Length: 219
Ligand code: AP5
Ligand code: MG
Image 1 (spheres, rainbow, N blue to C red):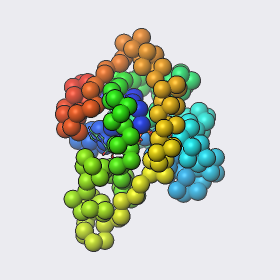
Image 2 (image 1 turned 90 degrees about the horizontal axis):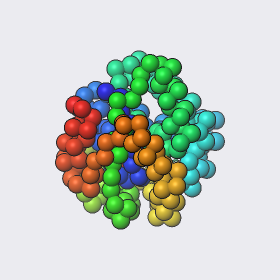
Image 3 (image 1 turned 135 degrees about the horizontal axis):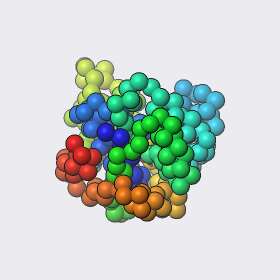
């Protein structure tokens, strides 16, 4: 299964990709997570990416392609992958096509997570995630049973405290949504024209979205 997940910030790409990963053992390849990891480790690449991320702008195509190429070359990606957040503009889609031809792994489907923009603000301001395992929660729709600590670790009292992403501030969210509309939305037509696009209604419960997602993914 080789999938691309397309959708606005907060549409649920990470949530659904993590479910599918846990269910089917297919790696989630999230450009955002790879970038946040580079920023947290203070690598040269992370330092170059940080200002764009903090402002809700796209990081340069060349930096992100390098990360994706490296990630897809690891052994676990040989049996499939879920690309979450890549590609994000037409140039990245062209670079991805070339990369996948090189490694002989064409995409099976591109899944668009369709959600009304009005819903996205609350999802993003309410998001919390675990700094250690990356599990995603929402203080409104899916809080951790352990309050402000992750439920994915042994020992409720010692489990990591959940954190809010630096770009989940209202002013930055507005810019991320604008960038999505201007740079990423054109990919919907790009993939529709290639016969790869599957649209799913992502404004339903996580479980219902997952059921549609499985169907769209052919599993
Ligand atoms: P990235 O990390 O990719 O962020 P994003 O695209 O803005 O998307 P999000 O991760 O915010 O949303 P999501 O769709 O994963 O939603 P989630 O499942 O978490 O990118 C961050 C930055 O990195 C970019 O701004 C850019 O700077 C840079 N970057 C990344 N990729 C790049 C690229 N290719 N090129 C250049 N730069 C790049 O869900 C959100 C919340 O909603 C959660 O709290 C969740 O619990 C909740 N939720 C999910 N589903 C539901 C549901 N069905 N009902 C109710 N609540 C739900
Ligand atoms: Mg995400």
